[in-house]
Image (cartoon, rainbow, N blue to C red):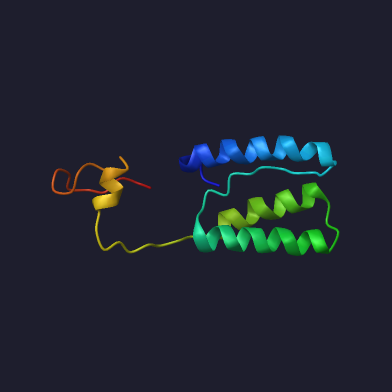
Length: 99
C-alpha cells in the first residue's frame, strides 16, 4: 500500500494487531504501487508462501519486485487529482507533479 493511502495503511496495521491473537504472522508492507502492480506483488508473495519460502525470503522478493514494476496511467481529466489535492487546479499549473 502506498503512503498516499495512509489511512488504509493504518487500518491494515490495526487489523494485523487484532489478528495476532490468532497466532497469525502478518507483515504490513508499503507496496508503493496500485492496481496491477499491487496484484503482481501479492501473487508473487502468495506463490512463495505456498512454496514454504521464509518470511525474509518473501520480503526480499517483494523488495526486488517493487523495483521492477513501472506503471503508466492515462487520465481523461485532471479534475479528481486537483480535487484530491495531488496537483494544482487544471489551468493554474503548466506541469503535473510526480505522483
